[in-house]
Length: 321
Ligand code: AMP
Ligand code: MG
Image 1 (cartoon, rainbow, N blue to C red):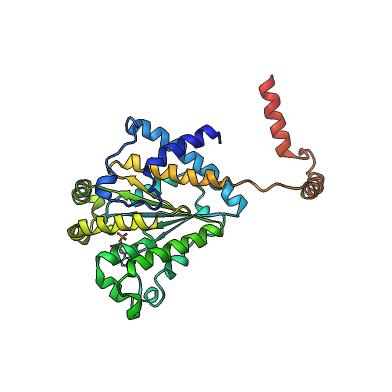
Image 2: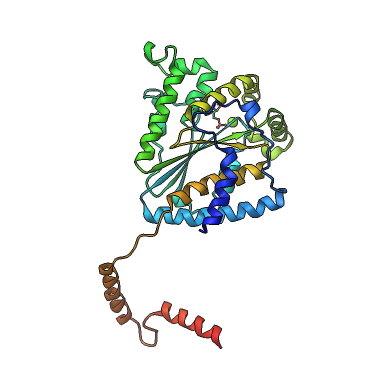
């Protein structure tokens, strides 16, 4: 990775980052239709391809090193493009190194525990990229907008008294700080969709039969709380964008642009971690050479002692003639 390329990525994502401590008003501070000066879909596709290749390379190193883990949290309103973002950004990445966790309405077992429990159960291991499709942030979003959901959590009176949201923000910040200090990076993306683009996407889900399965009438009913959600998102972004786990507000009206942003933020994190393939020491190399001798001695009559080395030598020789 050239420093220049790393710098370009850092510059590209800087306008999306929520400055820790700043007060966000979504409606005025972030434009869902922003395209970051990229010409269009075609130029965008090239950029995404580059980003995706870079991610695949870094993910291999992350897995080989096995020291750091990355948690990518995706939040959005319905039809915000979470599923498509995951699909596009993760093409090319070894599926064994990535785990996606979807969070829906909590089960009764989940409600038997503290509110962060179910998220803690799905955290990535070292060397993995974990993706939360919806995340612990639902606990200060949908649960804040619909107070009956807080009731279902069977909290003691004092735990749901006034100040519950401020306390949850602090608890979430502390939890993410704990993860960061122990080698897990939390990357947070909010896909910021406009109300009109959401309407268009819902209609597409109705008009195109293959998309009907994605449509739910309750998603449309949820539009009635649009302003409450905008408020809850603004409060969440203001309170939980931290030095160790900043929020990125991704303009989501253009899917292709949102995907480039997501890939870039994730790449930025991996570049920062800079995972390395483990070095093989003198002793281990010596052991390898002994085993190599044994394997070479097993060559059947007529076969090269080391077929791989022979094929490499042949290829090199072939080019020269
Ligand atoms: P989907 O992502 O379309 O499968 O929908 C999942 C649903 O689960 C959404 O309507 C979310 O609002 C809801 N949901 C996710 N997390 C929670 C939570 N912690 N409490 C209540 N509802 C939730
Ligand atoms: Mg849905």
